[in-house]
Image (cartoon, rainbow, N blue to C red; front, side, top):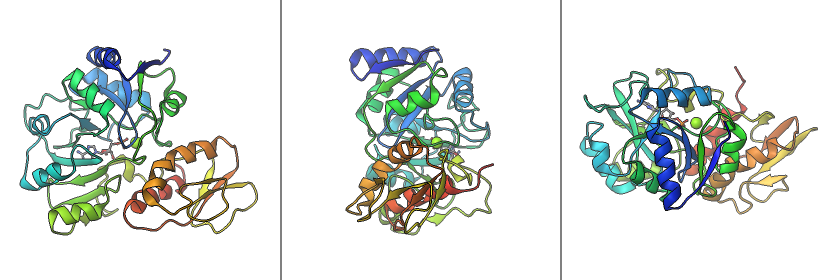
Amino acid sequence: MQINQISANADGFKSASEVLRKGELVAFPTETVYGLGGDARNDLAVARIFAAKGRPRFNPLIVHVNSISAVQKLVEWPEQADILAQAFWPGPLTLVLPLKPGSGLSPLVTADLPTLAVRVPAHPVAQSLLAAFDGPVAAPSANPSGRISPTTAAHVMAGLSGRISAVLDGGPCEVGVESTILGLADAPTLLRPGGLPVEALEAALHGPVARHSSDDPLTAPGQMASHYAPDARVRLNAAETRKDEVLLGFGPVEADLNLSPAGDLTEAAANLFHHLHALDAMDAAGIAVSPIPEHGLGRAINDRLRRAAAPRP
Ligand code: AMP
Ligand code: MG
């Protein structure tokens, strides 16, 4: 199956939504990374997402819709969800909330959990596709499971060629790391750091957000130790390169590629996966990475880099 590359215009949104309606898969840009979309109500479409990615079935998917009212049809809606949705949607925030009975979603989406992860993405192409389709779209990142996430249509084509029907090309993703996932089924809990800094959530909620403990059962695939892995081995907090390594820099260092010479974490997040893909293509044995500060978007960047560096299964 050749991937059909669809332009982001009215005709393209219509044909992409028809692909979804048939139960087939379309990759599309969001502000975080490219998502691999399928009709969240269609068991076959959702099964195809897991198959195309080679993703374990126990890893639930995020459902994307284009309005708060569409979200409220799927999940219970506590006051804290409303505060955060008003403040940060559309945007790079996923909320995990109790699933409503009669939501109509395929049970494969939630991996049979009683909760659902939902998001309203801000990217205009994602918004237009969701409006044209007018239904919930399950969409994990559009890459083979465990590998580097895609931030361009070319990354999607390279990773999933032959396995999906179409990709909507919307240019490079602006945020560049996945959404922040916040659990709200109990006390607010950070399940995955991401494109919205946890500090912003705490400010909006006027209180602390608990951190997920590694003793808790796995609720997000991004929590698996090895993830986002390039072919090259990854070494963190590197002051300089060793033999057969290329350097992924941050700040004022001589590097093969630099996430942000000025030390700007927003710029670094936007460049992270793109630079990892590019360095991996250089075929070095290893990728050394400069130290990156652990605050704001730096938490999401370091989280992805630690998993890229973790021992492989
Ligand atoms: P991906 O888009 O590939 O980054 O994966 C989607 C993320 O949403 C994963 O980290 C999922 O585990 C997470 N997720 C989806 N549903 C739930 C849920 N019910 N509870 C917790 N995390 C979830
Ligand atoms: Mg992913």
